[in-house]
Amino acid sequence: MFIAAMLGVLATMLLALVRALKGPTVYDRVLAVNMFGTKTVLLLAVIGFLTGRPDFLDLSLVYVLINFIGTIAILKFVEFGSQASNKEEARA
Amino acid sequence: MSDFIADIALQINLVDIVLLAFLVVVAGAVIQVRDLFEAVVLLGIFSLLSACIFTTLDAVDVAFTEAAVGAGISTVLFLATLTLTAREEKAQYRHSWSGFIVCTLTGGALIYGTLDMPHFGELNAPIHRHVAPRYIVESPEEIGVPNMVTSVLASYRGYDTLGETTVIFTAGLTVLLLLRRDRRSRDRSTSPPTIETTDRRGSHTMRHAMVLRVMSKLFIPLILLFALYVQFHGDFGPGGGFQAGVIFAAAFVLYALIHGIEAAQRVAPTARVQVFVALGLLLFIGTGLASLFAGGNFLEYKVLAHQASHGEHLGILFIELGVGITVAAVIINTFFFFAGRGRT
Amino acid sequence: MDTLIHLASWLCLLLGCCFCLIGGVGLLRLPDFYSRIHGGGVTDTLGAGLVISGLMLQGGLSLTTAKLAMILLFLLLTSPVATHAIARAAQHSGLKPQVTDAAA
Image (cartoon, rainbow over all chains, first blue to last red):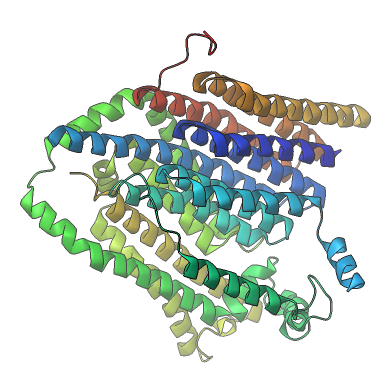
């Protein structure tokens, strides 16, 4: 039944991917990427159990941390980017 | 031709097909999207998918590095660069037919070339016949490290790893040389860091970041500890110097993102970090020289201790440490230089 | 006892997958960004937590379970914080929630 779990996670990844491609604003895409990242963590853990190699859990662990850092980075820079352009408009 | 297809059908399974299809779709979207921040976000998904594909191909160390570098650090550096330029891609009004033809011809030539290659996973492929069986058979006795990838990377192919570390070092050096003068002249012209930007950024960060600040104080020690674990666990599982260095740098990047670049530079002053960039490579070369002085060849670890496999363990430990230090310092340095530029 | 743990773990896995799927559908179908955050964020954490708990029950008492416990801990800490950060950033940049029906 690991296969069923893996298929479920893959289906959710597909749904998140569609939102990432469609999302009108950039925040929709960021939300979708965050969700995609969490699903990747689950997928890697389930694949690890499926193939009987628990080493893959290190990969999942890294991915949880990197997903968080990536999301925070995107938010910071999107806000700061818009701030910088706002300031230039205010100055000009 | 029919057993060619049967061969392929045996090896590729459903997960691979689905993931590769996702990859194509995301790649198409990245090209098509106009807002560059959104393109960077989609590139994050791209590298995630690549990490999953590497995992299904059983290449866990590569997947590890791809997850850490591609989705984390690359995204951050792309974003730091994007704050310096326009946010939207310039509209292209003319389509280039010559470009299209060149791409199609090159792609077609490459695909035609792969038809000559041995089938995926075939037992008699040359890559499985010459050096690989020797490594697989001899590595447990000669080196005794459970993770064969580490033993090949660090000991059998130690020169290649030395070359890779030198490349990373050179890249860090180049960033330093190209961007440093810019910073110094800018610092001289605008004397103290403009209160306006700090205050504006400071007040903006304060409002938004109470939850983030508290959580980051919880996470950053855990991330650093995990980086150390990955560094020393590389002998037994996926990991090693490269991945550990990236994760270590990611902790500093997180700190800089939440508390500001000035605070991060008080923790890790640029001059100190630059010393570490060189120190890692020196450690690597020093291990090689130590084996020269001990009577063997350059990077021949087994002369470093009384028993051959102990010597190998010692050698691998030191060079992985060197690689980790250089990678971490280069990434921290590059991030500081990139992210510190878009401030006025 | 063994079969009980086995059953519990399958149950957790399936429930977790269901929640993840519900979250995914919510991400697609809900009309507005702020409602999508509810769908995405809450079910994300819950579904992931259930799946990892199911895997933990499968693993028994070992290093694997300890690593899964750490993954669970990190997920429980980072996922809500990330969702909060996304919502806060969207609000600061001026994205307004949709307060009326699209048809009206």
